[in-house]
Length: 250
Ligand SMILES: N[C@@H](CCC(=O)NCCCC(=O)O)C(=O)O
Picture 1: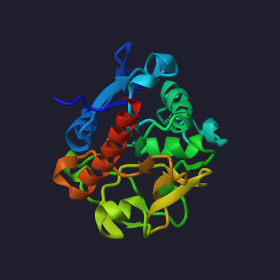
Picture 2 (picture 1 turned 180 degrees about the horizontal axis):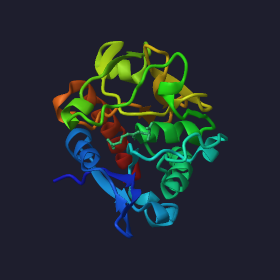
Picture 3 (picture 1 turned 135 degrees about the vertical axis):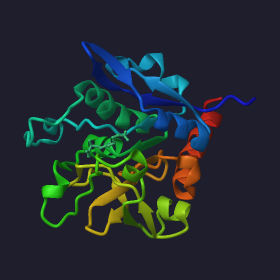
């Protein structure tokens, strides 16, 4: 059995009762294993920056979605809703790990909150309530619906001609799910737009450096990834980059 490429997955810090837990959604781990063909390694956020313990042992970094939002001070904004959930430990880890991974040639793939972390890590900003911003649609899910409905295709995205995602999809327009209240306002430096919704919201980016692998999407391709050719192809694209890194590391 060939040794699978290993991918670090920074965890969320969640309170369960009086106790903090490090938490990673199982659907992300399943998609990484079954669609990307890699071995996911959850990474405790509070110690994630002790990179000497693990960074040389992995072949990729995957950033999951989360109900929590990035603290607005991270992108020079104020608090618009004191009821928003935050995860400062995750912010501290991921916002440093993203440029660190790229500097070391480590492939990065990011989903939803992960896309927002990528944008902020490269100096971009976020709309904190897309649905209350003039000109934008409501990109949130209906949490009263069953999960199958919440993660079902919700709107089309327009894939950039000649971009990675258009190549994976074999098309420049695909339907994706949508479960987010925040979104990209100002695009971070050195990021290229890979997809936009019809209202113009940026829905996917990649890094401009042709020698780097960084892909980030606002939707959730991990949802039943092996049953959706576009979602599966996106994870496989990342997995192939991790395997190339693994071959270089040997
Ligand atoms: N909080 C951010 C990001 C939304 C997000 O990642 N939602 C997914 C949560 C559940 C899951 O992991 O599938 C925003 O609201 O924009």
